[in-house]
Image 1 (cartoon, one colour):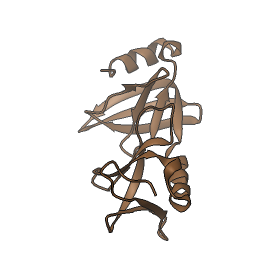
Image 2: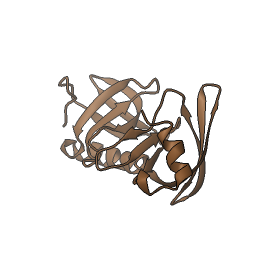
Image 3: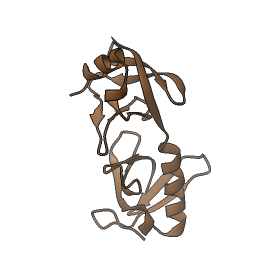
Image 4: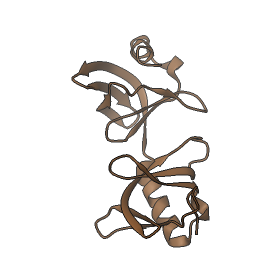
Length: 159
C-alpha cells in the first residue's frame, strides 16, 4: 500500500455514485485527480483534491498502489487526462471574474472559461497549457506555428 508523503496509508476506489473516493487515517473523502509535473511521467506525483481544492493526498507513484486502488486511480487519470490540442485561438474576452476563450482544437471548435488570475503556463516539452474552470486542459503545442492573430491573443495572456 502506498503512503502519502506524511506516511499515512492510502486506499482509492470508485464509489457506486461514480465518484472517486480516497481513504487515509480512517477518513474517507470524495476526490478528483490532478496530475502534477513533470508531464513526461503522467503516473507520478498525482494530487488527490477534495471539493474545496485542498490536497487530501499526494501519490508519488501510481504503480506502487495496491491493485484495486491502482486500477481506480488509473481509470480516473484516463478520464481526467483528456487534453484538447489548440490549433487556433479565435477570441479571448474578459467578463466579470472570467475570461472566455473561443478556440479551434483538433477535436473541433470549443468555448471555455478561465479565471482572470489563471494564465497559460509553459510546460516541459514545449508549448503552453490552459486549464479551464472545469479542470479541462487545452494544450498549445507549438505557439510559433499558430496564425498571427492566434499568437497575438496567446502572448497577451502569457505571464
